[in-house]
Length: 221
Length: 221
DNA sequence: ACCATTAAACTAGCGGTGTAAGTTTTGATG
DNA sequence: CATCAAAACTTACACCGCTAGTTTAATGGT
Image 1 (cartoon, helix red, strand yellow):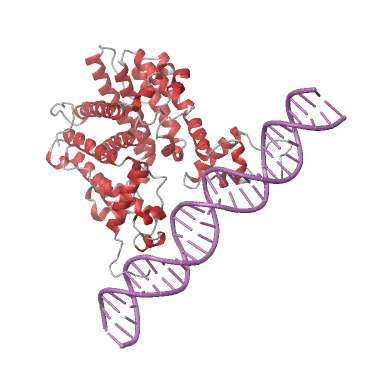
Image 2 (cartoon, helix red, strand yellow):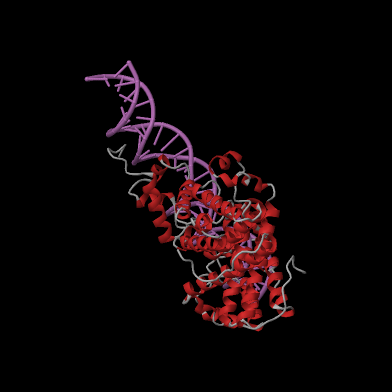
């Protein structure tokens, strides 16, 4: 079966299928041959469209990052913008948790990741933060969001009561975490993000100049 | 070469060599055959001591976690204990950054990781936090530390001025991040951790009861 | 002292991986 | 109509995690 009348593969189709496959079966199970099979094609055919497997993963990761909303940084104050962005970022990652270990290692050369970093950094500087401080804040928020999506605290515990009860006195309820996974993770995220922003506002007032107050809670957008 | 007079492998030797190999060459380059070669042995011999490759990685990860100091939770107030623990945790992870993507996915059944979770949770509950809140706080701090070690913000940028200057107006200095990697990452971590703890103290005063104040800075221990 | 069992290395090999190389046919271009 | 690039293909290499079976040394029981 040589060149078909109509190409069977496009970059977009490959990325969509790869995303679905990673969502469904996880990163370790994702191979070029399995992706090709899902596309009705032989393995090496992918290399007509992407140079390496990592290039495919980059495209998947950037697709996820591309759904993050940073628009608050041009329309709202830096605190509200940061909170909206962090929640949007978290939603994007938790919608595709299996790609997070790959994505979380840094923006690399991925356009959407770089555009996001650019928007956040630019917004913070515009709000009056010194450039070095803006870098730190963007990084700290990213640490928190990426960490929360990567190491879903609840998911990390095995469902085996016996394991914990015996040796770890305070974790006797830990196996129950799996039941309330989403609420534990979201609660921890909400608490941590509010605390982080609260502390940053105090720092802002001390070093840049007083501004309004922060109310906590879920984002508006 | 059959069974030798003196065993050439022990679990400890395997774990030490694996740790060194991962530190030196990264997770993707780490294979059972390469590890065996470094030990002067054939690949399958490892399976006399570990059931799977993941079991070896678990041992490596738990060795790293085992160096984290949680003793503050029995001797100091919860804020100082949390700060000391977070810094110790971060130091342990940044000393072996290549294992972090594996380690950050959760404690699983690793004894040192479970003992750490137990100590933190227990300390926070003893300090007066309601159990559900203690879970959230432990998780939030872990998100932040793991995220900071995983996605070393600075390391994530490629060293290629051209790449950024053209399309991302605010990132014109981003390639310089690689130069100041350590100081950027540590600065972001210090700022974020202090902000987080500051916000948590406010929350504690509001919901549990007033306590002393927090001064910021590096840990004492 | 002998035997049986277990331990710890080995070799061989299976099915899978990423990807390089070369082939074949189609569609587009001069 | 000749040529060339595109997009699929087949084949193949070196490596991967791991299983199975083999060999010999050390250990424990009678």
